[in-house]
Image (cartoon, rainbow, N blue to C red):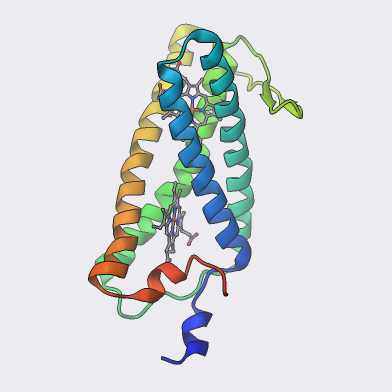
Length: 185
Ligand code: HEM
Ligand code: HEM
């Protein structure tokens, strides 16, 4: 394979930027939720305020990413991939998009109901209104449950996704696989 063909099989620049920006923000949000758990109330409120803002930014960026994805075809998959690898990648990617929308939406609904309709501040810049959901315990509890189960599922997906990427790089010694989600030098 010459350099020209090798370099051609990459995602569009916008897809690459959105992939890594969203991945970073999701990782930050897991860390924020975990560290907030053991904090005293005022600090916890502060950290969870940032968690909510970051989560809503992930939601907005994901909508943008899905629109972008519909407008930019991904590079064709390597012909050397086995059918099960293609199927697993497709299912994992689709489930990622579902959870990248579902987790923040459930969080937003939980926060809206739990606070009795308080808007979510985005780093003091502006506020996102609450969703019109009930503030009774079962409703808030249901969104909490969805948020938590979604986040747990996402951890499983991240493990599968990263294991897949490393398998191509380390076991199959395929340098191109990871480079697909990078920008041209
Ligand atoms: C929270 C973390 C992450 C999320 C939510 C995520 C999500 C996604 C999604 C949805 C796609 C499919 C893109 C599309 O075709 O529309 C994708 C592709 C990809 N991701 Fe991630 N990702 C994450 C972290 C990572 C990490 C840590 C790595 C590297 C170790 C990685 C490497 C890749 C690569 C190489 C592709 C391209 C797959 C292909 O060749 O088709 N991702 N990711
Ligand atoms: C990238 C998106 C997000 C991820 C990955 C994420 C992940 C998590 C995780 C792992 C927890 C701890 C598990 C639990 O106790 O439920 C949590 C808790 C929480 N999240 Fe999120 N979250 C996201 C977005 C949001 C958004 C957008 C909001 C609200 C606007 C939100 C509000 C909350 C609240 C209020 C809690 C604490 C629940 C409690 O224990 O009382 N999250 N989140």
